[in-house]
Image (cartoon, rainbow, N blue to C red):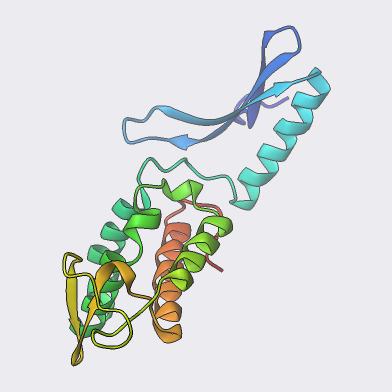
Length: 193
């Protein structure tokens, strides 16, 4: 056996029937080893199956370092480093408006790695559930609600339902931000696709 080849992973027995499986994924900024670990309750053979799967995910590039940042932090970083350099000023302000108006309440505090397709679906369902009313049509807009000017009409911010085109723009911005997180290896796949 060649001793210069680094070990792909290890199995450590913590107690009877409980194993920790660790796979080396790289080094951090301080040059310390980083490992992806998983606890297995069962036999050593079960732990070996998990180790093999983790090594396979690592080799395919699907095993990534856990991102400690929230989606809001990632979106801000994405906006300043990527979007600002490749789009026009108007597009940048539109992206900023979408992020400020629709995404942070639903996903802003959620860690990037924990965003699931179900979370995105809940966001879309929440956007569809909101009602949009023009002042003077039907019920009046609550005077205490935060208001914004859209065209010639006032809409209440708390009751604004985006149009289908705006909903597509929201999904496009969200998907683009998550695609960049995938390129930066913060997540293994894009849940927005």
